[in-house]
Image (cartoon, rainbow, N blue to C red; front, side, top):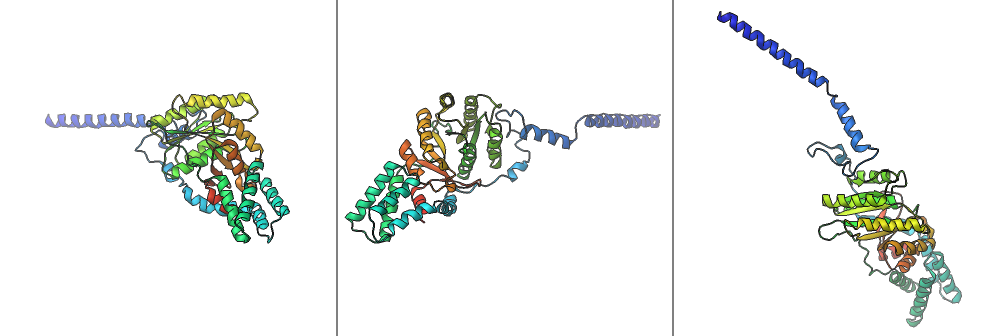
Length: 380
């Protein structure tokens, strides 16, 4: 009897175990395989059609991330100046050679001084600044009896540095008050390279150990948000974006909101390019700034100017300055022109400093502007 009971119990265990195994196996079969899960997750996170704020960097903190291993290390700002000085000297060579060739003559007559003026005007230094430089230089050489060409060249360098004014504060105003992030609004006309400048500026800040959130408030150019998000992903910076054609002010608002929630150091807001002659678009830009400041003050408004546009860039600067109170200038494509005098002209026009210059097509080809370095490159 005991043996019979034991056999029945064992049989029941075997049958029950098999049933449980069958149920578990069926349960597993109803779930997609791990590979499919990974594919779905990647699609949702990295390729959303309408990405929501906070989406692209959410996830399990303990899960391994392949993106971290592929993040780029931006070059330190100081190193860029050394690397880019030779490139600047090459692109501005005709200006420096023209100036030095005149001052290298044994006799500086009226014709020589007129030639010096023409060289400066051709470089977009501007009429008032050119007159001031030439007058000061002529007086200095005459009063001090300078005839040595090398001494004359040193005097020219000193005058150029003085006009660019090394005393101006060229640091990026990227620190907010009361624990809020600094907010940098980047503006300019179409085609100046604003989105690229924002992406490069993010790299400058990341290299300086600052955390960044990007705001893709250019909602009118189809590829602008994608382009900006790509820049951010390369250095591990999140991008807040909205639907194509949406309200740019709301994107700026959400970007700053995100920066506050995350304790971010700096929020960089890219805006749509707009013609300075279109009053409606310029009014909209003012709205973007006002809406952003419902969250936190805008600490910096950077106007991006294409250095190749010359004097037309000054007109742009004047109008943008009236709408959003520009605090700093970024000169792009400076390596593609010999009109380096635009640095002097635009500063005098707006009364605000050039803070960054773009030199080349590389990811780290944006450098903080330095008056002495710039003039030395001109006269190299």
